[in-house]
Length: 131
Image (cartoon, helix red, strand yellow):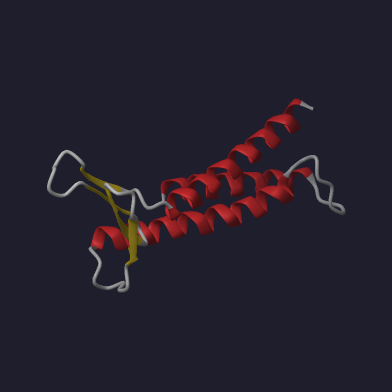
């Protein structure tokens, strides 16, 4: 019972981690610049992986997507690629981890196969976290 509980808790935490990677990939506030102290241009600009936004002191926010891929800095392209690889690896390892849970019985699956699947999904979660 304790092994099953630990396995389910690990699975839920890994789902939370994949959701966090997806949320951080979609967020726009990867880089911020605050110019509220300047009385001439009281703006707050921030940019993410997919678009850049400017918020003025009046509360108006304008966001513009990046229209080109090749014109972006290499660091931004690399971060985009690594975040997408992390999401894909995390999603695949979630699917593997679902079938590797001890509380899930499917046909005549042996314990050593489930252990191998658990190890595979764990390694893939680690690789998704590193990417």
